Amino acid sequence: MEKCLNPADPNRCQGIFASGQCAYLAIEGSKHCARHGGNQVKIQEDQKNLRLYRLHLHQERLDTLADHTKAKSLREELAILRMTLEALINDCGDTKALVMAHNRISDLVVKIEKVTSSCQRLEFKIGDTLDKNMIIQFANEVIEIISKYILKYLPDEVANEVLGKIGDDLMLSLESLSPLNGKENA
Ligand SMILES: [Zn+2]
Image (cartoon, rainbow, N blue to C red; front, side):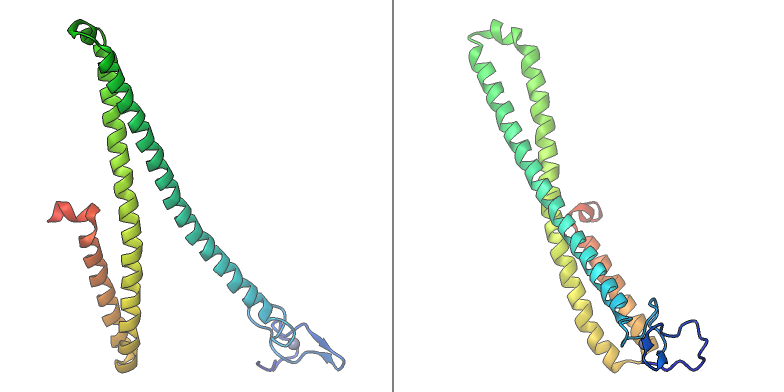
């Protein structure tokens, strides 16, 4: 708590004691000092940020679940299309019937091909997202561990540069490991 030197200071705490207006400076972003509840603003702000962060994590989880649901319904659609194709071909008793059904058969084949590739793309995306989150979490923990020692033993100006370089190298390494980027470069 900091005393307010100038009684007319606009940042003076607005709280009132029996003896008059509070003599301390208000906390930044509030009209009151800590004793008069000024830190509540900061606490509320922190809680709000935490809630937003949790919502964000929740949203990412929901997105992944939605992808799983979508992949599942695509796989079901694919199974139905394949069964329809099989039934259609089985119903054609001879070559003549097969030729007659040609358009319906090729429509089904095109649909099966489209659904199959959407399904594969989605399943690949799901796998990639899960792995990426885990790897990024691991990289963050590695940086945290390294920072602890670098900040302890190196002077600040060198420490920040070294940490920046380690971070850049780790990001490059992560990018080269990603199945989405790696194949063209290999
Ligand atoms: Zn006060």
